[in-house]
Image 1 (cartoon, rainbow, N blue to C red):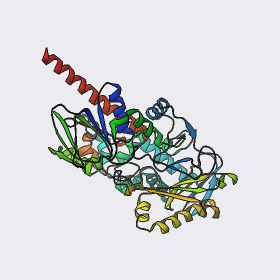
Image 2 (cartoon, one colour):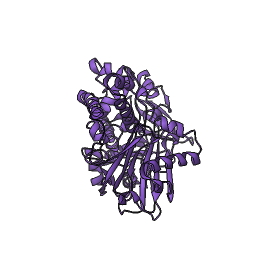
Image 3 (cartoon, one colour):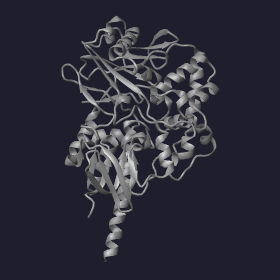
Length: 462
């Protein structure tokens, strides 16, 4: 019996939907299986009072993210800038400092220490392993140490070390002692450097998508039509040289010539495979946990901070809500502050009751912006670690020696199985841009092999 479709795509996040679109455009049939009752993966819109959209998941794009920017244009979507006017707030060692521009008025010694540390990370230009390129030399040396060890060795001031740990939480939603230094270095290299990652104007937080970021997935799914099957959680995959047989939670099956798994590695590792996957792939997925992040959107009648000459941007090396931006809709009302509780702070917050967590988070916002921040008209909270079919945010990472031993399995196809998702990207790892790039790559791999199979079958029939 012939397979139902040419390709089964597992996961209707951006990576899976992009791969499916590319394959359909190349003339292949697809089935996109999504466990949730929605598309988008780590992209999720909600509605504010008055009807304006707000993003509960990933939301920003920036210069140089060519894959996602091209897709946004293709889909007829547009951008608007993240609000960046006025003074910013930073809290170091319990002391609030207001500043304008890119750099706060702090000790030149601290700035020099941080600058040198970030330069050290950026100058290596390391990349994640590829299927045919195992690690050696300096890359393997970096992979053998935690990022905490690297910070201790390479930064000279205690304040500099604390701020670097804060940057780690803000970027990876994890702690430095959990991360391989090579993963950090490669992540930065794939994203254009540390400065671009932590900047608003000219950086990764520069722009937002009109209508909310989930519009990307919704428009892709609309074009794919009935090929996208929601509420279709996958439990196992039988595979051999003839194709794949995908078993769903309801007992039904979908068959195809090949499959693209467009999910975080840790979720790929939870599926049953017959036969079992090679040991390096199994070990890799077991050693790639997700970061932990709770995102809050706190809504006010108006963006009161703007009237006080503030941008709505705030950072702290000690508070649970360590990063804050103005997330007000394009129209200017209602006012919204978006805050992030990351890494160890998210672990601790998850143990609190929702009311206690809300109170503490509002206390942090009030410390930045005054008593008015304690009186929102609505409070939206999303704990991505508690999402069954996500497992955490912002993305996966590796600990020491994982990439050295098992990193070549990150993108390497296994029989008819191919891997996509932002963690497998070669550019903008962990970002929407990386998800798009990975979808294009996986679809290209599969399309080339399907074309080869068609040619071989035709030749045999002559």
